[in-house]
Length: 127
Figure 1: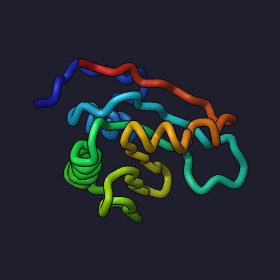
Figure 2: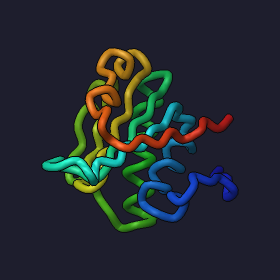
Figure 3: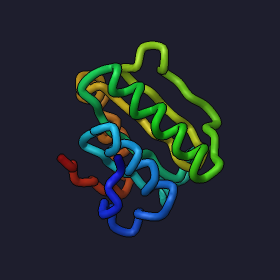
């Protein structure tokens, strides 16, 4: 059940807000939004990165994002990768790319460090 009082600053009613809410619905953690708009020659405007405790949870988060964006915004992903192993799932909506990791894979790849020049907004975990 979704809580209506979740606030993600100015992101609440946007695609970004819906993605964050979808992640939080399935107990995803350590959500970070990387704004890439000011970086030349990037293929996307933003990355949304989160992590989960298990591959089952990674799959649940990815499916929730895909289902809700389709149902509520009539958007389907351009591409989906990693759903076979669910250690790192990428869901690509062109302007927004979502990365869902297991904790181990996120620590290994440290994607945020690769995009250190992006504007980063950390979203507080909810319990």
